[in-house]
Length: 509
Image (tube, rainbow, N blue to C red; front, side, top):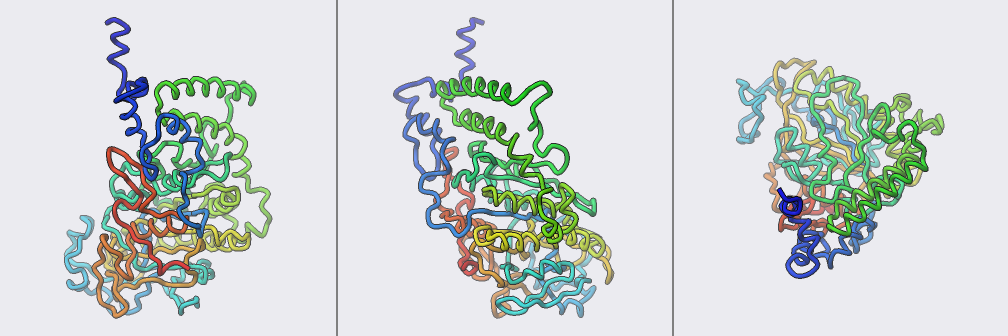
């Protein structure tokens, strides 16, 4: 084949528009590169400058209450009935069947749908009442340190979601959609607000070691990915052992000046491609190369905890000395906030306890309890809690009935999406309050009179908090109107809350 003919056949649609200076090509390129919240871009120059912007013009939309988010994600679905949602009447109903009118035909997973019965499993763990600003709140004996900071917590007992299996539920919680392909919450935040430290990513992800060793639910990179947003906004995932970022160190025989010269040459080539084709991803690539170069100096200092005073390790626990533990990651999160990292996500896996709740849940809780409390205390003593929103929770809760064998000392719990518990602290949320309540079985959200609520995603249901409502509320604290932070993709304006979501003002100061 003639080389010229081959080149013409291989030309992509984007390349064709990029090479077309006037007419249809310019109009189509403007449409392709449109950025939600801004309307269409005013030509190729705006697309080239996009990667250089410190967030979007006009964002935040109003004065923010928080600048940072630390999201402590308990992957697998922690049991609210054994940690937060005290149901003493269940002791009288041990091993009796869950009443049909309580379940009311609600969906169950295939893991328990074949059981002959749904025997009620009261929590084997004791609960203690702790004073908060509102009234006494009951917290499991498994969380003594967290109970010590109850006056800082906004406990939400009435979270709910439609997703009943792990992958869609986790994807929903992280991206606002149960289907893969959407940008993560941290990516949306990076896209809208931009960076506060040019030497560190806006969005960083930490993975924690699990003491129990029962890590049965994977977490995928798409959970901190950008979906259709420019790739510069994806989370930078730090490893718990070895080099925190792969290939961060220069190869043997390459010094900093050589690396700098190589990047300058690569940047010149990329700038030429950007000018020719107008692809925003080329601009993102340039930015990522430059950030990687700066990370070589900033990340080792960030990850070094040796300069922290002894009293800090006493606060977080001796596990904080060990890289990759949940305690060490919480301490790193505080350092990241101090250095201007906007969104920090800490994953802690192993909460999917379909069996052996009595054996494994204490280990899981011990992994995170002291560090969660320490993080809140540490942020408060450094003056950062007011501007840092801390979020704790999983993708759904667990059932009141036992999965598999039941005894007073041990039992399992299946997935339960219709009522579960999360908490938030700092960042302008009300401290020392409990929001929402469930029935005597912890199965359904109820109103103040104890009547079961059937919440709807279309409207804000008083007393209930859907995932879209949670996302809308988090963005609100960052000064973002969730309906206005959008991105045009495939002819539609997308947003984190899809077409739903309401700010839950009862949670806010």
